[in-house]
Length: 227
Image (cartoon, rainbow, N blue to C red; front, top):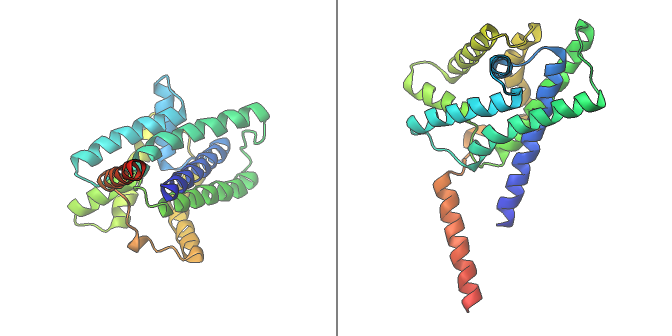
């Protein structure tokens, strides 16, 4: 149980870093593809960009379930918590005025690198907890299994679709938005290489496995108490 607790803490740290990365890219107007969609939804619905992230995540989880993908606790927490952390850091920044809205290209570039680095480290941390892949990652795998195209093509197609819909809804984007499509993967790959983390051997714990563990843990605890 102690190990599971630290895994949840690991998830929260990862989600917080991703949320902070969203705040940074929001301030320079260079949101990534999915956040362009979230920002667009926040323009046409009475919700924040974080709440839009949660809404999109929940919808994708429903699609993942229909596609019979194996989900875990981390999948649901991903959908809910990243949006919460995004709103938290955006509101905190607005209150403290740490990073103003920036339109100067030469200031946007280094902050884009900071935003991508924060998000990539966050993704690595939550992935390494092995508590369930994110809703979008699960959808990407579901699409890849059903179409005769490699995972990279399917991922780019998903991000392109998210970007187009978000842009049509008035989501904020710029040249850095397109750069993140090519930077995110290599940055995450570099972090995994440095840490020795092999994504190919990753086994995410499903809801069924978590339930089995909790059931066994509770039975063991009750047995020890009655002994």
